[in-house]
Length: 74
Image (cartoon, rainbow, N blue to C red; front, side, top):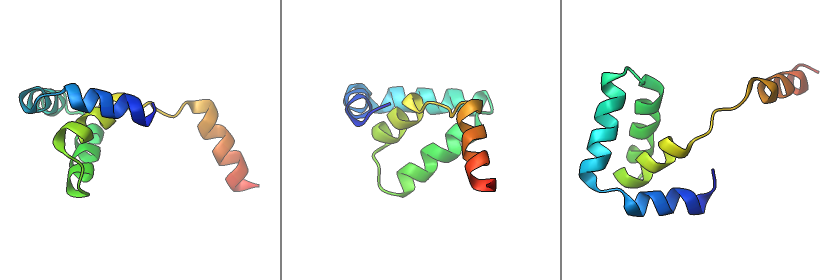
């Protein structure tokens, strides 16, 4: 995910599309996505930008987490 991709998607999203996506997250109990979205909006992002950020957020792989844990513990 890079900044250009996020802003491009945010520019393309309508407010109704954002509401549909966020509603879908609520129906699917995607609590982590909802919490991140709400946090970004409270911090000042537009609803479109917050939604695009959550959509394009890539999960951290288990391998990367192992590397972080190893570095932290040693």
